[in-house]
Image (cartoon, rainbow, N blue to C red; front, side, top):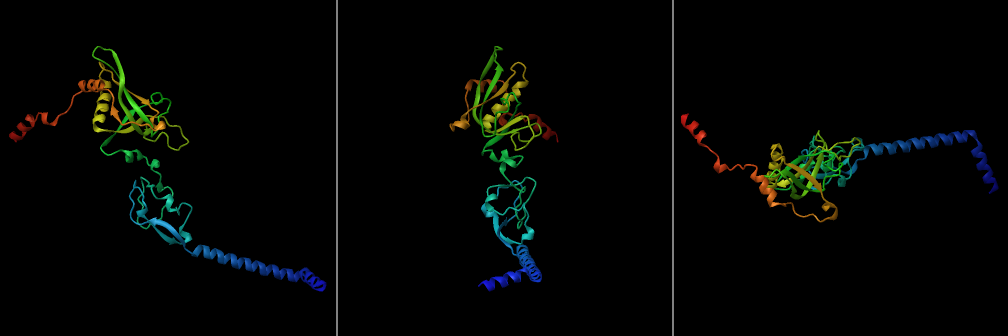
Length: 277
């Protein structure tokens, strides 16, 4: 046993032997390393999601829009999305169409809040998008966020030239807060943005009431002004239905504005012109 140990030790101390072993080891490392790299570059990676059909800009992506296929690694980069769960229920970007057969990429597939006009997708059926001008003061130091609920008050001069103030509409959900260039104020950005308008959606009857109220601001004898008051409904989970809260204020606005009725339009002039022709 001692003889064997001595011979192994002597064998390993031979410079030629060590050199040969080193060369063999390097060759093996290069061989297996090369083969591993070749397999990594050639062997397709399975279950990569791709578009089964053309996906238009600003379109919600569903599971039915996605297929899976094997793709050579050379076609995959860091921006390719490999997990279908990171695609489903997200949206194609506003400036990009995803053609059928294409892979999905970061920047092309985005969250709904990243769309510049995402609030339009949240407008309920039979509602109309409406906005009111705001600033830092009227948003309580930029404290009104999308998803919050607000009440709209009106301040005006009545028939006796006395100031009246009251709640006109309550429980309106804020869809977006934008600056004067149309960018979302609360977008994930390092720059500071100043609120310029608040957007929300209301039924047609409330839309007309609010629209008339804003135009009454140009009447110096009435000097109407709409005031936004944030509520804590979105935090307490006790959101009531959107509704007009003061019949008096509603009648006041309607009395001081006109209403267009199609069946009362004067078509006499138009008829005379047609007759002359």
